Image 1: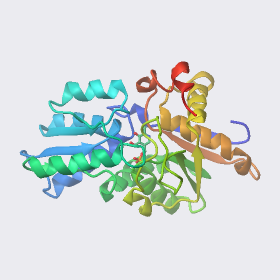
Image 2: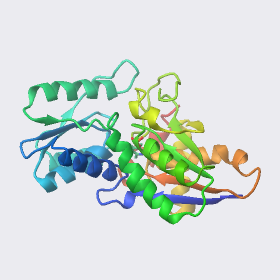
Image 3: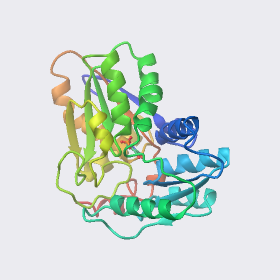
Image 4: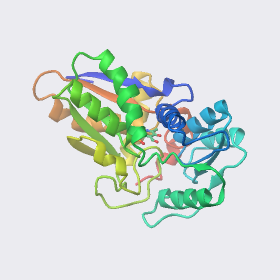
Length: 292
Ligand SMILES: Cc1ncc(COP(=O)(O)O)c(C=O)c1O
């Protein structure tokens, strides 16, 4: 992009396909080290797709049961993946009072945990190990790669990524500006709730992990701009990335006039997952015309 050195960290090359591989791996590892899970454990978690997919693969690897709690907004690719790996998948259908499904999903997780013996709820929204995953792994890789960094743009949902990455980057690059990226209709940064259509970014609750993040500014992106930015990433940069990646790229375009005012900045954003699960939505022209 004009006037800046722009870098994308491609988290979709992780083994199961998204940045959430790191969260799932680290949370399970730490829980096992503390003795919070054993071979009788059933892991139960609410997810819009990526976290559940990573948990499904890694629990299978170590012989644990896993029940994902999903909602109708999940991409059909993720749903098929989960149904192939997990004998039980619970799909909630009822919208919560903010027009999203998160609260309904979390209520279902609590009900299942009360009913099923030896449950373990990773609680990606409040578990400090989720932030630690990104402090150690995601940000560790960034620090190994960059001598200096001026701006980093991070899409927010559970806030685990921004909590861990912001803390580590501020230690390493004291002047780096961390820009949180959210979608219109999400309540994370105090905006009015509205129905959202693109999974993986935004939330209908303020995630507890947000208080662990150091954030300099916030950019709210309308979903229509996410769609345009995803297509631009593909057609002009050769990156086939998902909705939150496009949202971060759109945020950079919005924010660019403020960044290029002085010296040529080094700017980084994360491509949290791949575009394939979004072919029928974000990458489908007729679907996109239904967005406001
Ligand atoms: C595609 C995608 N991007 C971004 C995020 C946001 O990461 P976090 O939940 O750590 O805020 C998620 C979380 O599920 C995601 O699936």
